Length: 400
Image 1 (cartoon, rainbow, N blue to C red):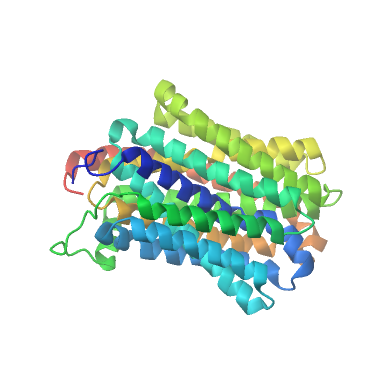
Image 2: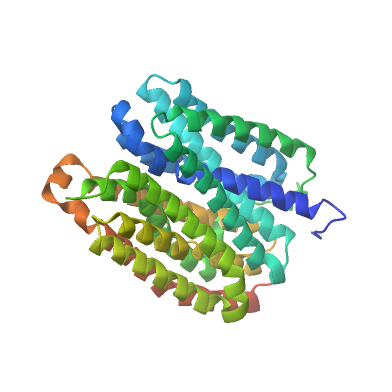
């Protein structure tokens, strides 16, 4: 398929993708900003982060084959409205089962938005601009998560206010997508490509290795965003809740700075050097968190470094995948994100055990930053294999 401004306004499509990715930022930082406050008023809500992650996985699985077959517009609108509807469930709900459904909707909407916006940018930009535009897309995610954490901090006394504003803004902007022409579906009725066929893409070494990397990256992103605030408030002599919530803002700021810096770093030093540099910065952030758990300044520095460093992985790896998978970019992106979300699900479940009352009493949360260190090192060990597999796949496979 030929892409370009003759078929659709590429700038407007890219802007819509950036808005959708900003909405996904709300999904990813929903619990990190809300859990300390909602946990005080809603019994049992501490057990819901894994429901949201399960929703992300479900949305991502549905997304891949659907957008390659039917295009982007309807899916982008429906997923954005699902996110807004999930927020409304928390605003108006009064029972735990409704909160479970709402958490799933927020996750499912965000899961579709994440995969779809990456696929849109991968499709409408060629190899020369794809990495840069994926970085800008990632920066949009950071802006969305930053705005979310800021308004949650400002109205920390009433969590309903940020959810009301966010639901209204997301619903209105998602309806604006109706008026934007999007690229046509890449697969026709004659193309037989089922969900099972998309799973078979794992037979290509590049996607299998990238999946392993994204698993550990998913664990890292989930636990750093969702449990760092609990770590700072739960360890002995930790910081108060206001400081912990503010540190989450520093994380999103750090991630945004990292995403805006990445295109220049990629141009000057290349993908491999940039990846290891950013991961080293993330490792420094985790170590600061471990050695300075009682310092407000340490919390701000740690979360800034973690945000800055962890923001590099998705743009770099999806650039590699976009160079290999042209026709089935949606399926390839979705499969990678599903593996990352499985990592998030596992990470949220296992690390959540560290913050149960019995674990807190035994001092187990003290070692939470070391778990992040292990995840960072795993990503660094797998990255050279992804780069090598990408170079090999581009030489051998020409019809993906």
